[in-house]
Amino acid sequence: MITAITTALTKRICVVKPKVFTPSANKYFSNVRKLGRDSNQALGLGQYSIDFLRDGKPSQKVMERCKLFHTDSIFCGISAIALRTNAPSILKAEALESTSSG
Image (cartoon, rainbow, N blue to C red; front, top):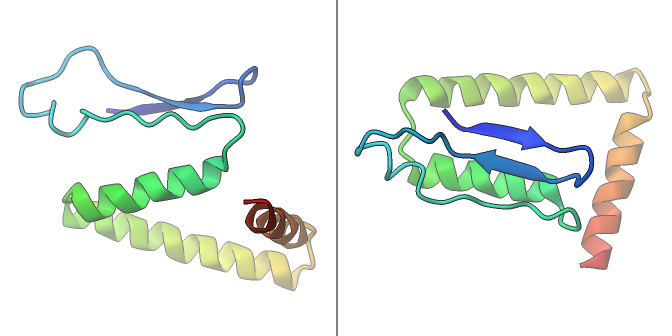
């Protein structure tokens, strides 16, 4: 199992590898990505997820859970917009800032 840890001091997500592996598990945990505090961590985590789904050969059950998560996130976004919460505006502003700065 991989554990993602966000530290309050560094604002960085670290992926921690377990110390005990079976030989067959080593091929799945051979790469660790560090997401720097000055990087767009959401983009980095998203790219990691895309790479895993493309190259990691996840099971059908994992793919079904991803589909459910995606559907849930879409409905949460629609709900936030319908209720006129400020989160969509903040996220939009951050996305625009991120794309204009780099």
